[in-house]
Image (cartoon, rainbow, N blue to C red; front, top):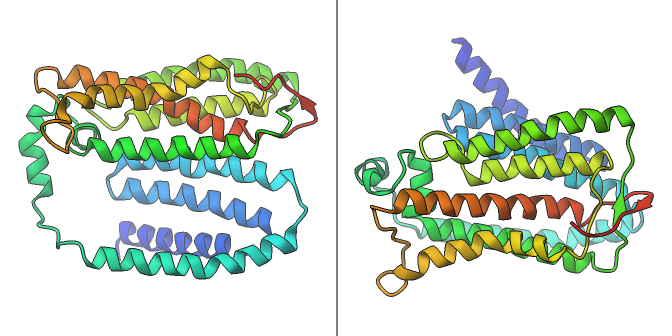
Length: 305
């Protein structure tokens, strides 16, 4: 038994243990911590599967931003525990029914041909980028990505609607933490810019860059340098809408010819960079907004961003 196999077995056992603890644990704080641990272990699993793009997204969104959201929600309101417990049991049959429907849909899908890698490689020269993941996400299967962004946008609108009567907050932190944040956040911005640029030819892209931007905003909020908001300013709304709007504008010329997004090969690279830049801005605001819209603290902020 070699070292790689031992590591994979231990990693798989850790995934099962953390997942079971997060789902079945009675202590909500411990369950959230185990959820974050699960996200970090999944990051290692994706690295082991040679999928660095997904590993970056899992670390930033799955473990980082989602963990921060859960911790913030956990510290907000401890009332209604019995009601939430009853709701959980009522939701279990619904979740089971959805799982059965999804399983049936998966069984109805045609068997994979095994030629996807070859098909992507053959068409890569016409995609405008040299990284196959970016080519699939923003050219060959561009509408899938557009729908993913639309789902996140709908989630933010739902959170803003639920929190419209809440009082926005601003947390407080020690001056030393604020000073360290002032040094760290510019490097996070540079990292986001690099991930955006690198996505055309290596692991990176809009989702990873946006996750880093959102993490910077969450960090600023946690140290009291950015207040929560429930009514975004006009400039924030424009930034949130920029990604889907640019995506639709670029896709509009192909609507009459096909149901699939087709970019002209001679301009595909520039158009993908334009889409990715707009998506980075939108997704960064959307992911940060999911946290800022529910931010709680002792001192009210101005509610604008």
